[in-house]
Length: 475
Image 1 (cartoon, rainbow, N blue to C red):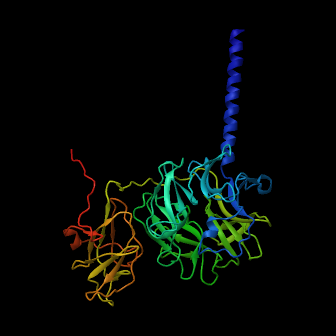
Image 2: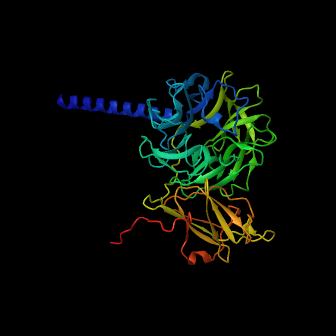
Image 3: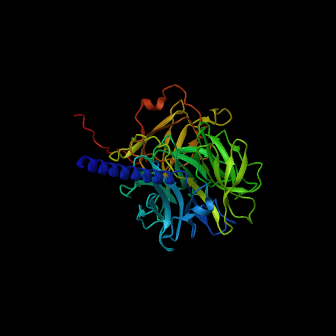
């Protein structure tokens, strides 16, 4: 009898275990493959994508989820406790949702994270300034844009990183640019749209940099007269997709593809034969794309599937005559990017910059322009010094860290030969090199030792005779 009772109890416990496992499995399945998207009742007829405020500060936007197999029946608003919310981002383990939101109408925008299991949200940033455009980094960190009206570097929205609980916040961009629509590539670098705001407004370009703020450089520059207005997202076949306008239809988005390995020379307009415009895109594991699309300005943006091989739209997955679909992501686990090592050492006050030959232009040495014999280093509000280059056109500088500067090439008579390069900054202890001046970013340096490195680097600003660096113990 006792043995029989034990068997019943054991069977009961096993049944409970199987039941818990079943429901746990169902919950996990329910979190996989759900579509999460942003919608807005404010009609997107005259969106100023070039200024980009219309991306960041969308009034009364909502984040929703739905099951793509039964979209009408499963539609659910996730951000009912917020005045406005957008920029959804799924964590690499598929368990959390990161987004930017205003809790009340006049609150500053902040970064929030939602547990997709119980749909409870917690605030990540607690800043007096607007924080937007969040993206997950590896190992419990995020990157986002933060606005500062009184920034000494004359920037707009600068890039910051912090832990997912909001701690250990650090600034990582130090030039007069405004950044938005950040995404993290599988190689561990941050891909973001940057636009110069000082001394004059520039055009939006894709920039890449490491999560510690080092190695910032151009990744993709759009067509002349156009504008970028979506994150650049990787597909499963070595490409990136995004939305870009051109001067013939400024403000109306084309669906663009580029190769990861040759981003500057591989642009393909996937939507050239499709009337209408696109607002956002998200790659699926199947190779197809989810896109926000409308046929004309009188229509609302709706959610469609797109075949990039055949370059055709599928049927609408979700549409609502009262709302525009603005952004979309899919729940579930996805590849975690590489964690890049950092060379930043906050005990060091400078970084090193080496240029191999300032007379390299485009893909070859300049034959048509006068050769430069000097460079002028220009800061935000003053000239930081002039430096003679070596006989081979190289220079080697030690520059104060986290201070933006530009380099101008000068001939022997002191005439400026070409427009200055883009704004550069070096993080503490960073070492950077470039091939030439305005060279093609895909150009590989020649296999030789520049003459300038045979001497000590020139300290910039030049009025500083000595920089006291961190002392390193050899014990």
